[in-house]
Each structure stands twice: as C-alpha cells, then as structure tokens.
Image (cartoon, rainbow, N blue to C red):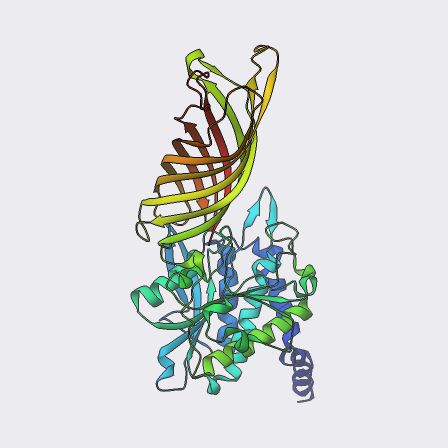
Length: 476
C-alpha cells in the first residue's frame, strides 16, 4: 500500500510541471520540436513533415478540438506529389453567424536538407506553427464566446508555392462556397525583440481595421496592404478571392532560409506576446457582429490588372546621330530623364493595351567636326519632351513580359550644336519597346528612330537622331 502511495505521489510530482506550464514554456517546447534536427527541416510532403503534422494533431486532440473535415488531414496533390494540411474547427455559437468562417493558418513545412545541411526553420515557420497551436488552445478555453466558426489550419507545401493554403481556399470557397470573412496567416513571428514590433499586412481590407487592431499589449506596425511583388504568404489564395486578409510577422531579421535559423535564436518572450495578441484578436473578430470587409483589395491580389494604370518613369540611355547617305553612325552620348505614363488595358486579362508617355529628357551626342571629321567631334546637348505611344502585346497576368510597337513625337526646348545649321524643334519617328513587369514595377528598353532630318536647311547634311532608353517604372 505504501509503495503504491509513494508511486502515485512520485507521478504527481513528476507530472505537475506538465500541467502547470506557462504558455511561453509550451511555445518553447513546440518550437524546439518543430525545429529539431530529428525532423530534418520538415521538407514538404516528407515523412519528417508528417511527424510535425502528427504532433499538431496530438495537440489539437489533447485540447478537445475537432477536425474540420471527416479526418484531421486534408490531403491534396500538386505536380503529382501528395501533401496534407491539418485542419481543425471550433464551431460558432450564434445560430446565424456560425455559418461565417474565420480562418487562422500557419505553414509547418520548411526546406528540408540542402547540401548536407539541415534547414530547421525555427522562425520560418516553427514559430508560426507554435503560435497557431496556442491560439487554438486560447480559443478552446473561450469557445462559448465564439459567434462565428473558426478554422485552424496548419499548411503543408507553403515553401513550394503556397500549395496548402491555395488548396484550402479552393475547397472552402471554390468547391464548398463557404462564407469566409477573414483569413489570417501567422508566418515568421519569432523575432519580435529584434524589430520591436509585430507587422500586420492588410489592415485596409477590414472595415475600421486600424481601430479593431489597435493594442496596448505590444507595438504594432499596421500596413494597409500586402504590396511586394516578389514575396507572398498563405493569405494569397484567399485574398485573390476578395476575402479580407491579415498577414502577421515580426520581419526578416532572422536568418530565414538559412541553416542558422535554429530554436535557440527565437525570442520566446516576444513570441508569447504575439500569440497572446493574435489569440485575443481572433476571439474579438469571431465574436464581433459588426466585423465586415472594407471592400478594398491589395493591387497584387486583384483579379486581373486594372483597366487604367497611371505611372512614373525614370529613364537613362544614349543618343546618337546617323548619316544615311554616308552609311555612318556618330558616337553616342549619355541621356537621362523622367516622366509620366498612362496605360489603357483593353480588359482585366487582355493581351493588348495602349500606352502613352510624356518624358522630359536631357540628351547628348557627338557630331563630327566639319573641320576635322576623322579626329574631333562637337558636343550636342538637347532638352526634349518625348511622347512615345505604343500598342502593347502582353501576358494575361500582372507579372508579364510585353512588346510594344508605335511611334513618338518630341519637341526640343533647347538644342545646342556649334555648326552653321539650325536644329529643328520638332521631331517624330518610329519606336519599339520590350519590357518585363512584376507587380507595380517595370523594367523596359525603348528604341526611338527619327524619320525627320535633324536640320532645318535643305542643303544641310542628311542626319537622323536615334535614342535608346532603359526605363524603370512604377504604376499606381
């Protein structure tokens, strides 16, 4: 009897710390597991990623969560390979609002092993996966307050191209036509101390977003929209379906996508603050009857490009003179300038557009010295307004290459060339443009070839101006 009593007391003493762990201690344990060498970097679709998924399922079951679908795992395929999300649900209590869904998600996969080195991905995204588990725990503890239904989603294959979150968006919205009111992604939230703020991207997709998101628990950096054309997170599949989205992160200070992204570098106190805030925010959104979309969507998430795209351009390049009668081209000089552009797309996904620009350019070139054609040159300088107009052929997406053909008109406000002939004020000719656009930013090359003689006098040499420009542009 005494032995049994002693054994029971020993078990109580041993197990007590497990039940009395703080959230910060639990977060630490989650991150150290996800980012351990034993999981070999959690490569998407691998057995090691499956171990991470099983860990999440075990945590969900221990707190009384239920799977959203028939099974904990939502399997999907991409490019012939199998992956799986872990999707849980907390059903809302309001008879009307429970048919509206709040989705909170974080990806659990990472890069695996490269060149013999393990990419443990502690910040990216063991930190978000740990926070997701504790957000779920907090919501479970307050489930009676939930009016809307909350879906907790752990995504696979984010690192390969947001495959897991896109698969869930396709199913929830595309196939099942569910009423999703907000999707929040928790991705890289383990370095709060380094930046001393939590950034929330997409505030303006929510009606009264800044008022709803304000907090005195931690420093916030509120960004109206996700804007970067070269980065994306798990919000994208939902945002492109016009769903309000928030992307939460603590910045890019960590050694993400490097072997050094290990668990001991995580700011666990900061991670605890972030988790606490996001838990409260999710509870508030799921309980607020007045929560609504603003109707605004980030430009990068719009369904197709806008019909009208104004923009700004910076140009640099060179100008030179050609002598058709002598089959001779002069030496080129440096040119640069800036201007405005307007592009009229013939449809949101049209292959064709009409683009007009107004560029103010300072041009220069070298003109052969009539007194010593082969040995010396005269300097030409011009101030010009150049107006190219192009018909563009482009891809259907915002990120696209394009070709443009058309013509241009230019007016020389000032032209300095120390010869006896007068440079014409007006010029026009043919133009050609080739470019690449990524989101709002474009890089293009334009060639302008004059059809008008350079000089006013009929007895002057036959000379044509040619200009080539490299353009960096930003559309709005």
